[in-house]
Length: 413
Ligand code: RNT
Ligand code: ZN
Image 1 (cartoon, rainbow, N blue to C red):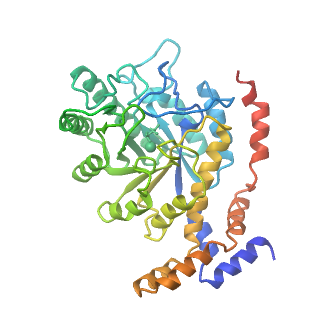
Image 2 (spheres, helix red, strand yellow):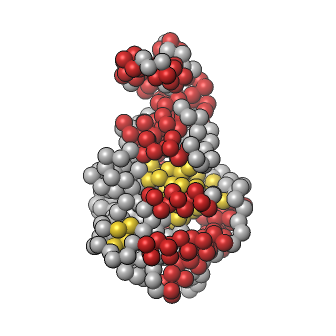
Image 3 (cartoon, rainbow, N blue to C red):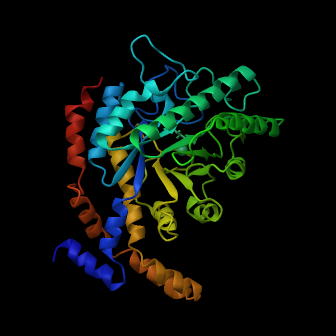
């Protein structure tokens, strides 16, 4: 028996069909963030990364041009199994020589090369307006700024991005998720917490006033608890964003780095599924703060996956990775994080979920605990490797990445 056959029979023993799990996983799209490749730098500004987020480390090989970033994305995608989308930020606009357009001026033409890239590879595209790393972020404020010039600039940016998102959906034939996240907040105690939130609300209303096709563009709103240098107050808090998304019928987005360290997004998913047809996730790993470490196959990632799978919500949750580690090989960061999400989904698909639910309903909690523990050590690796093998991939991707590092990345000095 091969390791997979052995695993298949052990899982069958607990009533789990590994073939069904493998084929379901194959169809789950994962949106891969482009910004791991260049430490969230983008191509449109010389500004340092701002907005209270930080990429730390200086491992050699950061992509410095669109060509380098595209080559690196290709390398990463070649090692990530399953169905993928590419998640872009507005700051990755590409300009012809001498034809720079500021964020309130960008349009579909500045993303034509990304669309060509996606189409050649059969990828869907997701999008994010970039409300950071720009001189018009003034006093750490964008859409909530009391300065009407600043606020208008960013509203215009949002509108332009909605147009670009529609263009992505149209050109790729795949719906586009457009996520709004603003860094706005205060380092120290504000005197007025309401006015900025009312202005943010007004700005969002203005951005979303233009008609767009809601079956092709899904606008999501991402909340946050705090940013570096913005510790005392965050305009787009969890409550604000959930209320807004609910009232306007847009999609709430939870980033699991955006809560207090003892709060768990795995516990919040069902609460949102009870009220929203669609929800969205940024999957990351916060270490002590929203540090955006590479996602691992850890307890919380598995628990998040279980919440999606066992509630039959794979088609209701937009899954995206969001982290940036500049201290290790960036291709490896991409592949390790994406594979971890997929592993977690496979692990969730390999649970006898109906049987476990039944134990809970019958209040057989002793048995539930023992079952959940013993399921952890079933031969999961055999099924995962089979998933990879069927797509021509090996479990070991390190040698491949190290070769790319030697041949390509080390030359970027
Ligand atoms: C920041 C948010 C946001 C960004 C990206 C680059 O805390 O998580 O999603 O990481 O937009
Ligand atoms: Zn995020």
